[in-house]
Image 1 (cartoon, rainbow, N blue to C red):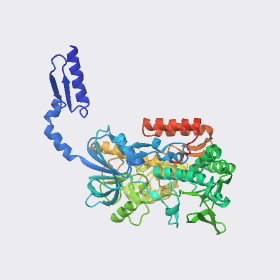
Image 2 (image 1 turned 45 degrees about the vertical axis):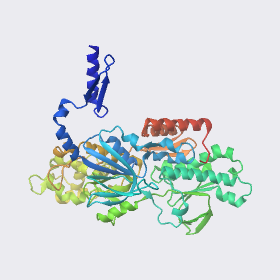
Image 3 (image 1 turned 90 degrees about the horizontal axis):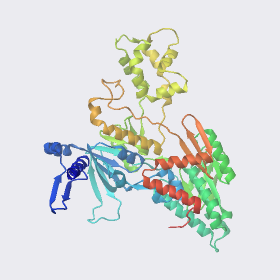
Image 4 (image 1 turned 90 degrees about the vertical axis):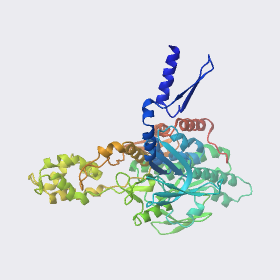
Length: 580
């Protein structure tokens, strides 16, 4: 009986885990015989021919990138109906919100990266990874042209093409220099892990050079002047991290250089952190002033040389040049050249960013999706579909509607056009019916097309583009993966809103971004948080909230343990100031 139970368990394991039990070999101890069991169940054996045909019918999905959007898609894709091929110059996913912490030695670079093969190795779909950079997309022939980023290959071939059935663009964006002279050559960026490592090395080099006995006073002042261009979250957090490094650690290690330290934050707008609540902006500005960080608003950089940075003051128009040791450029993002070339091919040459619809499908191109920083959702305007919406609700075709006639379509209107809900919230209207009643202006029950147009005439003013953040990209990747998981089911049973310009329903619900809040670390173990519901929290307790949220969002338990150990090491031993 015990032997029979053993074989039962072995058979059950082979059924539940066919990919791990291609061939089970059991050697009996008593007689030394060998028994072999195929992993194919009776059901599988009966459809061997059919399964091989299905393998050939799998759609090939090519994913360009390994950032937030691409990794979120790969993690949440559970359907085995696809063969996935990932192409990216980086064979890892990087937790980019912690890049400022890498620049000052609080966190090590390897602690925030996870190999992409580790992320997808246990997925039910077939997946391949190519470490290469895509330099051209051919949407007509459904090909992407790639170039290996290795210095050389074994057979000397550095370029190759990849065919696709479905293409997912998740390549991110590049830093926007606004064509400012000298930025590409002399400024540092903070988009990739390599940028953070390079910046960290440059900071240490400035300290080392300023500590040499033969360096002049003027040269020491120049080397110890750190300039941050851009008062957004990245620039502010980097300035705060740099201040903590300088006063908590470097002042003890480089006592002769600390008196020359100067940190300047340049912002072309009226204030820093302009996407945050005014209370956070005011607190951050006051704290930086107390910490000795020179915040200059209304200063636009016009030129960067190897030793000087020139700014134009908005109020006076005066151009001022100041020497610097290290300058970080953090002023927004721009479209990558390969995406720009793709946009020219599909009729989006006049757009600033690649446009998709609400289902993340690239406009003007079949079977291509775009996620994250490389694209923006071109939300359809209500005013363009007024007549179609009215006609869909007017089932009797008499040209007028009662309020009750909108009952069947009002939910679909709010889902298809999210600006309607935003408009209702802003104007403190309880429902869509209140909007229609305000437009009527009388007690008549009937609504004609002109009244309907009047009611929705200002709704489109609430349309907003989504911010280029990791939070948006991750949600888009998860959404698209869930759509792919239900693709076959929703082909026959659409779950989306009504099609106002056609019959039936959309296959899926459109993508909707849910904002869970944002953080702004300000140094000195203080962080500002703006959470949903207009809730603002600032101080030391919020810093611990920041620790817990970021630790939970890391992609694996390995990276969680590494980052937490780095934080613990910093508390006990201080930051690492070695130049490696």
